[in-house]
Length: 113
Ligand SMILES: [Zn+2]
Image (cartoon, rainbow, N blue to C red; front, side, top):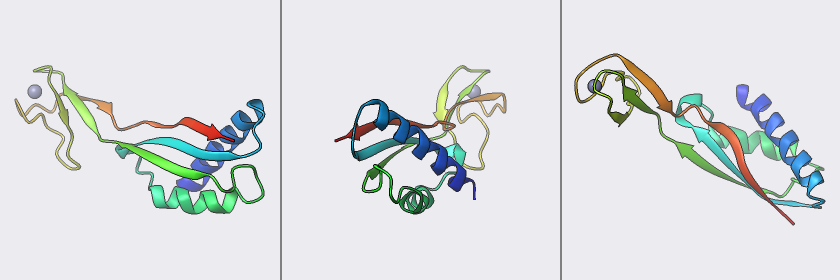
């Protein structure tokens, strides 16, 4: 259910930006979602349709850029794509890893009219 509050704060931000830009309509919203956040784009879309009714963002298209989960091994210093249940370095099998990508969640840009 956390998509509801995420979508609400995203919409608040978008409306504020549109207002500051003096725009009457929001055409498109470009979002970045990290795989690790567990945010489901179809849920965001669903809530967005519901929440944006009657606002300048009502007809806006949503574009999602999904960032894969990546990590760096602190033992061999290599970067790799992290599997869902495999939290070991594929090069040296170490568990000493640091998440470097996949936790992103933000509005990258909006296109206004
Ligand atoms: Zn390693």
